Length: 207
Image (tube, rainbow, N blue to C red; front, side, top):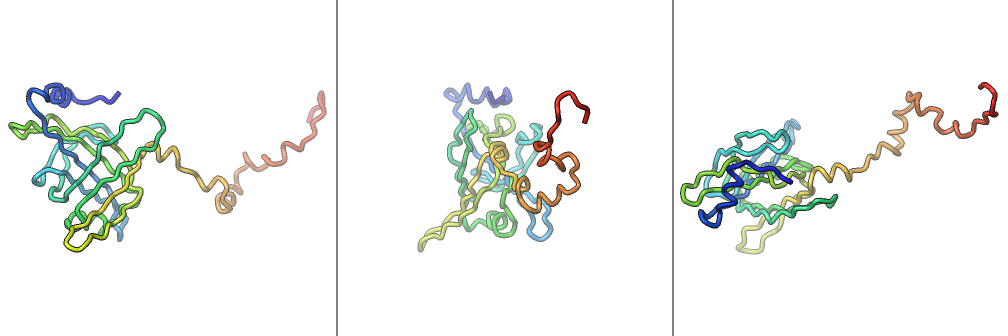
């Protein structure tokens, strides 16, 4: 069961009486194409750029991050599963937003880690009901760019898959590749693994 902060849970429990505004936040850690250095950019579907407290997806600690608005961010309902199913989430952005252009064209987002958070706001005060909670951790599995029709804006979609299950499903080509086997030349443990089965050891005799 997912643990959430007391303030977040209180906002959910009292949503019928007080009302509630939910917002989605997306944080992508890409790579600089020239240097390979990790670079991060956050987006949300609120009305203005913000610095907000969120729960870090790796450490679980509360951190402050900056999120950019005005990108027509669309985050679908994220399925909750309890088995080994690989979850997929398609996140859409405006194709013409400068920040999105920087992300997908200026940087390399292949296999980039992505954190999706849910932020709850009090409809009267506009204040956050505690730090934004993690709703999905994944990696970028594709980035198709839709070509818009005449007069339309178009969109960029990041196809995400759940990072934990993706790691479990990943294959290791070094197990059988020629290059991988050559690097085992100094492996004394496996040196005789193919000939042990041919040894004929008579019972009751020392070898």
